[in-house]
Structures are given as C-alpha cells and as structure tokens.
Length: 196
Image 1 (tube, rainbow, N blue to C red):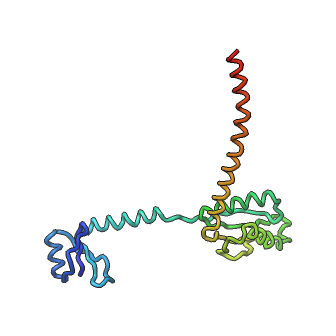
Image 2: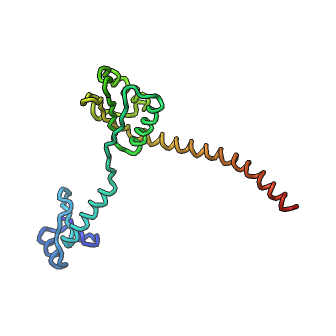
C-alpha cells in the first residue's frame, strides 16, 4: 500500500501491517483513498476530519453546478408578428441562461377546429431561432395546447447575447456626442452672460 501522511507527505509503499502500525503510532485512522490504483493508496488521517473534507468538496461542487429550470412561453395560433417577436426574445433569453423552454401554443374556443396552425407556428418559431435548438420532447397535443420542450445548442445563444449587448453600447456611444453638442451652446451662453 502507498501510504500518504495527513499533511500530504509520502511514507512510501508499506505492507498492510506496517501501515496500520504507522496509523497507531500517529494516533489516526488508515483510510483507503484509491483502491483501484496499483498499489492501493491509503492516507493517515482522522476519519471524522476526512468525512468533513469530503462533505465540503461535495457542497462546493453542488454550488458550482448550474441548475437548469423549465421555463414556459405561451403562444396563440393566430399571434401577431410583434407579439411573436417579443415572445421569441424571451425564449432566447431563457436559452442563453441555459434553461430548458416549454413552448406552448394555446388554442381557445373555436381555434380548436384549426389545430393545423399549431405545427405551422412551431416550425416558424424554430426558423426564427435559426434551428439552433434541439427538441427534448417531440411536439404533441395536450388537451387544448400544442406543446414541445426545447433546449439550445451549446454556445449558440451566448454569442448572440454578447453581440446584442455590443450593439447597444455602440448606440449609446453614438447618442452621447449628440447630447454634448446640445449642452455646449448653453454653456457658451452662460459664459457670455457671466463675462458681461
């Protein structure tokens, strides 16, 4: 067995009996870390401390893991173009955040007689998303709703969001010089009044 001390020092390759004697000598436990390794790796450490360190590693790993949520965006089969674009913007935001999106096309009243518009609208939505989505669950009717679940292709929507932000900053930079031009004549007028 390859024996490692509590502080990480290597004690060498020892037999099982020698490793147990070392553990008794330091008044600690002998814990097997890597049983598959050749020779197996064991560590001289207090068992409760070892458990605490393992739990701490697990908690930190859970903190770092991104929890994906299921977000729902509802459409109607005869939705207006502006409303469609607004909802699509919301879908893109959710996908950029790494969430899964449930797209629901809700049929109300007499719209149920024209269920063929559900798949057509869903195809249009996929086209608008530039086919950068993957269907997690195939589309189907659930009562009065035509539903599918989509997930963004890895890295597809983060790039678009960055481009969108850079366009916004360009627009604000263009607006600032115009505002400064309007502010300068007022300052000159004030300077003339104060000099008189």
